[in-house]
Length: 192
Image 1 (cartoon, rainbow, N blue to C red):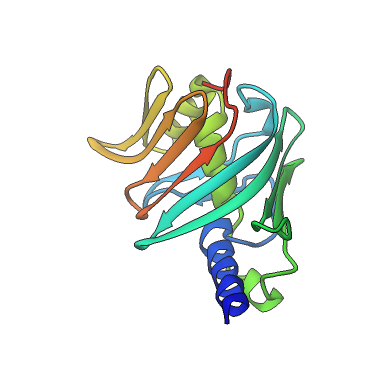
Image 2 (cartoon, rainbow, N blue to C red):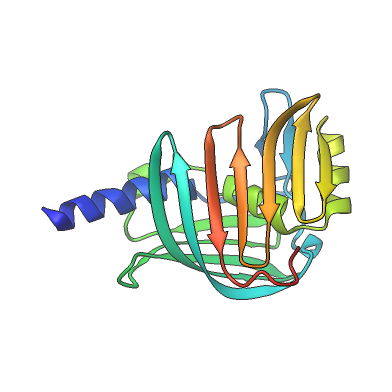
């Protein structure tokens, strides 16, 4: 019974958080609001390279989810691998040469086609990309980005829709519009 609950938890978590699929094309974008599209920035826009273990805790529709991950990101690529508490690979996301790819042995292939991994990449970019480049791109989408130290806020008019709070050991992203949040824990010293 415990094994079934764990399997269910990992599947739900992966489905809700990873938003799985494979997408390629010149202008990959996500819909931030009904009228605002954010075009994914090239990998060169990252503030600082990272190659580290991270612990992810997420809240989605009143439920809590927990994953371990390894994130490697630099000017050439973004690669994320997610694991359960026993070290089993739950899925992988990569963004390289303008293409986003997702693979998983846990999530059924029939379910993978309904998810969009580019949303995970966009959230990563909101947290870790150059604020000037990010601000210009959001401005082109009709949105505003404000920065204050390690914090970032993305606004639609006067409404805060996404908020990012950074410390040396954690990064929290809150998407008020979509009703989810997650906290990444790791050694983020220097990625503020």
